[in-house]
Every structure is written in structure tokens, then in C-alpha cells.
Image (cartoon, rainbow, N blue to C red; front, side, top):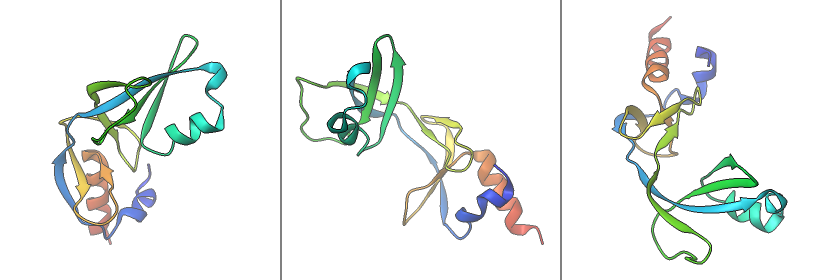
Length: 124
């Protein structure tokens, strides 16, 4: 990510944070079902991560509480174990120092990108 690519984050208020590990719902999606609209629409309508495995994908869906279909999903405590920097897309492991917006839309930046954002703001 170039400093020019950080432009969209200028003016946002960031606070230091550590993103905690969160619970996820896990489901296996066979290759032959991975393109079915009812499957992909549901799983992609919320934060999800698709991991290729033999014969399909292991899909994790962020679980923010509430009831879920226990016949289809398995609750995996703390399986949502990282976030992605909005600027460079690098993984930010859970409990690693990062920067998140304090209000408005949620944006998370890694320490390196936040440093570049700050430096570019003070450069004439």
C-alpha cells in the first residue's frame, strides 16, 4: 500500500486496540455446493472466511451471539483469530496492537500502516 492509498483513511479518528479472538460458526461446504446461490448468499452476507480443504471448503462465519442451526454449524470458540488491515490486507493476529476507528465506520489498521498514515499527514 502506497501512502496515496492511505488517503481514504485521513480524517478518521483512530484509537489503539487489540482485537480479541471471537467465536465462529464452522460449516463444511462441498465443492459441488460452493456455487449454489442460497449457500453463497447466506455465508457471504456476513463476515466469513473460506478455507480450501479436500472436497470443498471449511467456512468460518463470525458468531456474534444468538441462536444458530446446531444441525448445520459447529460453534468454535475463539476460531475468529485475526483481522485484516484495511490498508495493506496483512493479517493482524488477535491481541496484537493495532488501530481501530473510535466512531463511524469500522476500520482497522496495522501499526505499520497507521505509522505511514501519521507520517504522511505531517509531510508538507
